Length: 414
Image (tube, rainbow, N blue to C red; front, side):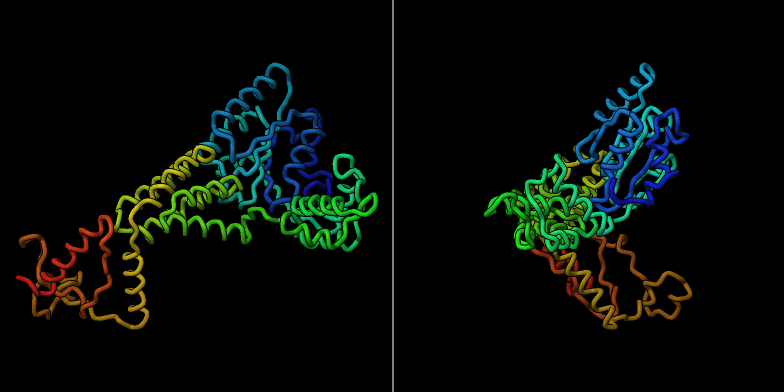
């Protein structure tokens, strides 16, 4: 291992877990590895399994369902009971597992059928169920130091499993890759690989040498990936929402697939769809918000990969639904009035306490005592018209109704 000296120090939970089961008091302790991308979470899990002699099973929360998880647990239990072989189950991106999926791990962790090493880039306090977190040791990983990234680059150049000395590399090129990586080993190696391919293609002699020019030229292709905390994250969700707003279901599904394949949190996507259902569809289709909320609940309860189906369903529905932003515009205009000082006194007959109503020259008129349950009555000190309906979808009916209601309420019609 390169880097993470504190997490891997002698006597640390990970170093104890790496010992053979018979020689470690930590042999059945599960671990949650929390850190940014490219800090060695998967490598640590593999190293612990190899060093301790345990069976290693790697799963991804993005593609593993409860059925597959139970099959892995059942095999681990059988191997332990019949052959005394313990298993390390490495679960990448555990924060993408729903509560039900995380709960399915509890019996196996509690009984010691598996040693769980879970990895997450999210704060475990929010992303991991409390019962599971309480049964695990939390190990925080930090971005790699520049010297560690430099060591990885040197190893990758010479190691038979890497570039096997087919290329050399200039010191300036190494420094640039280190700077670009931001402590992310995966990013550094991706850039190195792309730069090496370019250097070999245009080499005048053998072996080729990776120059600073090769690194800079390779950046555009090497780093075109979905970065959950960078521009790709914001650009893709923006394109997704704008495609749904623009009623292009095909484009919206493409961007949805792009985000899910890149490992975007499906709950984030579902939350954005709930916002869109009110902001861009609103009263043109009053069922849109309910469907978006149902999709969010489905995603939260079942997780990936099945959650993709609910997200696809609601994305297509919202894209094809009639659009209206009248509710969005109405609340924005009302709040702007409040901020600018429009705060008329509440009419006495509308106030809650009897003492507050004293001195009023009129009584509150109870709408249900009147025909059509609507009466001529002033509800706001000064007339305002915030809601401007659009003649689209269900809102066409509301547009007709509100004109009739306003006429009665404001005394323009008997």
